[in-house]
Amino acid sequence: MRRTHASSRPDDSSVRVLGVNDWALRRGQWYGTILCDLEKPQVIDLLPDRTSDSLTDWLVSHPDVEVISRDRGGEYTKEVAQGAPQAIQFSDRWHLFKKRPRIFTESH
Image 1 (tube, helix red, strand yellow):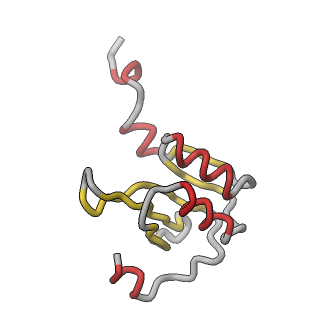
Image 2 (cartoon, helix red, strand yellow):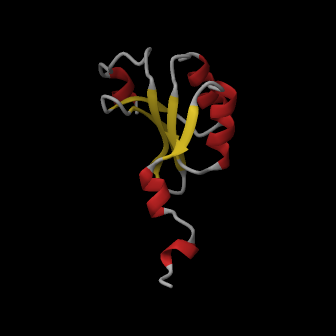
């Protein structure tokens, strides 16, 4: 994470379409939040945790965000609503198809 923050990263000040997801440094022990510019596509930031304050603060400092793709977790829903109330939220394709309710995976 230190190397990622130390390396030159793209200018993230004008992100319009943002992808938000968890990432694990040590699965089951330590998780952070990864932020991606989905129009370019590239990673623009790694937040050191999954707390509501981290993402909310990041979103408040980036008011140009219009669309946010995220997983279906309740915490990200709340954080986005607080930090970027102007943004449209949706669950991305991977989360819709890989984590779909069991009713959709059974054949009828």
